[in-house]
Image (cartoon, rainbow, N blue to C red; front, side, top):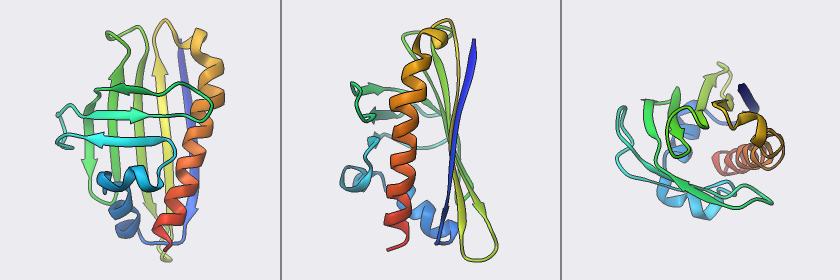
Length: 144
C-alpha cells in the first residue's frame, strides 16, 4: 500500500530566508506546532532524531536517515516504524524560487508499507493538519 500527503504555501520571502528559518532547528520549539525538534548532524546519509507532535494525536520520536540536504532547495529524510516495510515515510521539504521575492514551500511525505491502510485516517487527519499548521507558522516566521 502507498499513500502521499502533499501541501504547499506561498511565502513572501526569498528561499534564503525560508531556508534560514527551516534549518534553525534550535528555534523549532518556539514556532513550529508540528515538528518540535530535530537533533543530530543534518547531512546526507546521517541519522537524526525528530520529535513530531501532530495536532490532536500522540507525539512520537523517531530516527530517520537524511536523504538530501541541499541549501535553499530541499531537505528529505526516510524513516521506518520498527523496521523497513512495515510503515515507511519519505518526508520532503522543497523550496521553489518564484523569481519575484517569494518562495513556494512544499511539504510532502510518501508512505508505504503494510500498515499504511490501517493508519490512513490518521494520515489524512492529524498528520495533514500538522503539515498545514507548520507551513502557516513557517510563513509567519519567515515573513517577519
